Length: 415
Image (tube, rainbow, N blue to C red; front, side, top):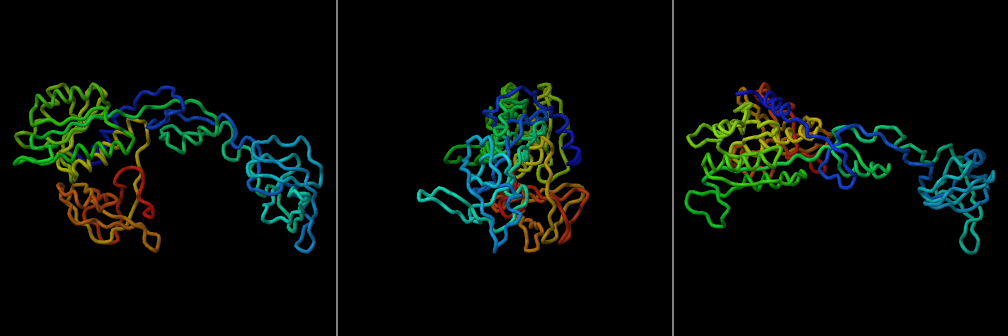
């Protein structure tokens, strides 16, 4: 039996990043940048107004005072999408809209609500009275203030999510080197499992496969294969062979403990798979197994529901990140609201709730019902509390890591 850290290291080392190819920027869902990408242009591409108001030369406003306003004639109007005028007369102002280019010689914008405007009968501005001096750059967006040409736009290993798509679109980037989303297959084992509306005697409903399907879909990873097999080594081997032909990572549930019908390790070995480890010092989920067939990975999880949830969160997700070429996750630190007992030598993943208290401290409360078969506490949880193997019991107010139930962050107001 190996430690959680050692098991994680083996898995992430075995998960060779998937090959990268040049990809068009539409669509990008599920892809990961394979190399740093520089911005090809400046954003904004030109200096523009940050507010609706009047563009002026700040030097023309130097004498403006509340009781002694500066009077500037309005030379014209500029709206977003227009080219700026070629010239601008000294001592004049321009009506300007947010995002419109600043005229030559104008280096500041006074918002419309802080201006006194003299208008003609048609409502067009004729002159503006300014009662305050403006500093150069006031309400002005500089060309390249967001991205300069040549700046790193996207870092290698970044998920090409909606913010990344926004940045790529803003710079006119049409393609980049990216890795695909890993392909995943799931095999649930157990003659006792049923998907029928009515259960026969001795059967239970399969909750693990729907859980994995839903969780993986939430991560943008729909399954390429999904099957349930009885406690039969030949049926399992056929299902695994089919899954390995389609997937980069295969998740199995059940059949990895020490019972007479726990045939998964032997079946994997008989098929030529290399077992990298079997059993990790964790709870729940100790009988976890990791194997590989060339560069295809198999993570065999115990069949109890919480062993599956922990296996997915703390072993499958890191493997998927490694396959995609992404950096490991960083978890948050929280203070325990009460003492947490822990068995010596085991890393404990506890269903828990985290929140930020009035003093802006992240706190975590381990929920009752930590048995590996109990699903109800998972419904009440918003995170996992992680008690490291060498940490022993955690005292009240002691620090420990917390991770959201699935990647993507904590609910609003937690962290």
